[in-house]
Length: 394
Image (tube, rainbow, N blue to C red; front, side):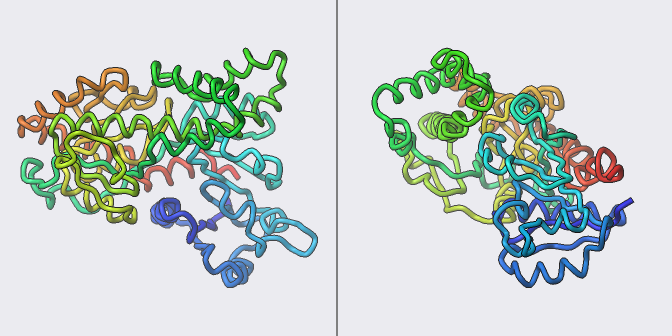
């Protein structure tokens, strides 16, 4: 069995943090690890060449880091380092695959994709059947301190927390109207359907509208066109972020947001909104240890999870989230999570106000969520799952 693992750092801060959390799990399993720093490419590549032998190493990366634009990882003949050294590449894709059409055209020889949403697996099976060994592995959470050291939930100073950036929907007009009114009407019809039916997968809605508009379109044409429509995915998640936070603030519920763009939120009662610009992952986790409730709006993962859910639970904050098929399987409403419906946001303020007035129920939810997250949804457990389901067989 291969006993060396390479992880990529120095890129997107969140993915850097995930890699470092996975490393802890891999070390506990007896693997030797190497952190490739994308900020120090040449130096890291030189060290990597000494660390990795032939056929004794595995790359575990996120979102194709180390697999596309890193010139230090290609030799003079255009061959990828991983291919030359017979290193399998395990790529955990934390976005929908339609964000990366060009990267699927130049995959390493031994490529294994891991999806964080089961609907992403279905998309790959249909549009990229050549991508084999697809595995579902949800995102996970990180706990900053033992439960017994955390304050009682009633004593936490933040009532409601949201971590994530915000972009007003008006800023997407440049993409919606870029090709004229006819195309804009087409895009708006898709957005209207998703807003009215937020349980639908956006890729399936886009696909259906494209097939109605372009009879006989091939799968290759469909996947190419969908990759040019990814602003719909970004629009819809920001649309509902706005609606959720706006609904709470205008119901005079104090909400603290961490992320860029919240000063642009349109609301009637701005005095109930506080915010700070985007912080590092560790800072967001620290705020969760001070929050009674942590609101999540799923980024259109309709059969997966977001790390916000498990991070909240792992730090004693109650996760308040919309649904996904996967979350509905593993979580129980009013026992270890509070679910809300994007179609009925008018019900959300009462849910939150009622909960905030019930300290004993909040504590039970906090305790139950913490225990579940610690038992089944940490990055150490994800490392163990990766090892058992994939890495030990490579």
